[in-house]
Length: 515
Image (cartoon, rainbow, N blue to C red):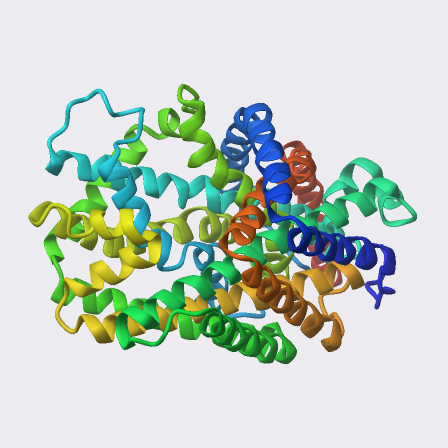
């Protein structure tokens, strides 16, 4: 077995991926309409020809992961550590801040209302009353931020990465996902390996810079609504600057200090806000809605996850989200690999594919369910601001209906900033890991990517909201090659698990003989 060592920086991947991001911004500066046209055409092509594949890929990933978790291999330990490096709460907190940070506050508030106002096509002909429409509206949001979405980030792919890096000593890069197919050759001068790393960096960069820009716009709106601070470009840039400063300090201090501290802090904030809303808000409505929507999702699990009839709706919702999350998947798997050493396969899969989705769904039920409750009592109180001002207006409208609404809204804005900061620091860390091949990349490399994401996001903000939307849609395009990279773990992960069982059985036998 190879010994893990410090690997050289991959300057080719650095130059190509970083250069591509700069070119995207330069072309946006020159002609944003042209860029939007390119992205829209390629986005529509991706949704049309890869949407069904993505739905099957995510379903297969989840099902195989659950089978492995509850099989006889579930007790196998990952990462060649007998004891986990991170306590359970710290570990779960860092996992939660990978995907939930992307949804954060704004999707949690807005998506249930979207599906309530316009019932998802799978259920639109049932003829439901407004009260009955709450359950499918919440349930559809649960699907998009639930079991399949989370499972693609850190189950089978993470098992392959951890085995290649910690058990076999190869660099911790997206190309390691292909190690079971190509062997050691994938880590040498391999065009396929370099392509895997490059597209993974570009995809996750697009998925990170988009939320940074959107956060600047959304927080700017919130500050104007709450405190009458002018909603200008300067305000948006200051918000992004604060976010980048927090993320830079966090990533410079490392995963075991800054990143885990921010993650725990944010989860504590979310728990407090959730508790406050449950106490002062429509408590029983929220609890009942969560239970019924979760049951509804399980009852219609395959129908909702494999629905194919309305292509336009799928491109706007399910397939868009699947492309977005797939673009994140290799880098998030690297991050989860780093923080999951010493955990068993069962612990990993249950945490990522079951516990995290349930927590995420409950957050959506509390925030979005509060909006649904007020919309039922006073039609238009939430849906009208949503139509007029989009997602940030929805959050403010919901908070405005609650006692102490001003303070709760300020709390939500703080949570949003910290949420996205945790995304930026963890993504910057994983990009640095990819370029240097070790889970202890150099500090300057980690901080460099935080600053780069911030600078490019600010430039895109100066162009206008259209450039941010174009970048956000572009991650769906980059998900095409990334999704091909994520196909082999469906069969290679079970093979690796069997190999690990043999290796750990051999080690146990040797140690028993010595005793």
